[in-house]
Image (cartoon, rainbow, N blue to C red; front, side, top):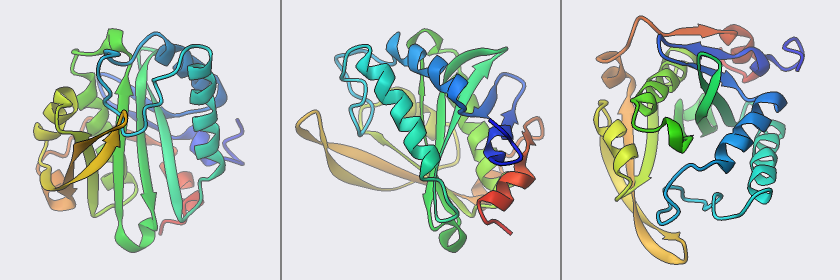
Length: 214
């Protein structure tokens, strides 16, 4: 993918433990295969959209469609930026940053998943901190948000380990039943209390131009 045409292809966030890279077609294929090997216990559903409730190869095909759709719909007014997480070149999961009308409200939301074999290694928190660095330091956000089902212990543990404030809840359908979704927000001021100096951004200036940021 030509970075001079599509600058997001050159976007990366590096921490001492992992790297986030914009999902290209090559990375998308690897992530689809990773998802097919398992993301969570089938008895649970950690996502608001139950995309993992299908069998292979439909799961892999849907994963590719999701990345392609998000890429094609990216504009200054709407982002769903999918970032592949890798550790020493091995793909471990995805972290996504979504927003509408960012130039007006300066807020973006994160979501993520990790391949089941790479869970419980502290990578979820590291991915979140990398994404927050991109949102606040790279994009100049004033707020970051996230959400999780009330019983998603892993996601909630990451969120509560960082200076988020719970700012509400809502009822949503979850596998044909109504369940409770918790909402959290973090201000720029609160993020600055945990801002790290060992996270670096690459290709950010061209991406800011593409996304219409000053």
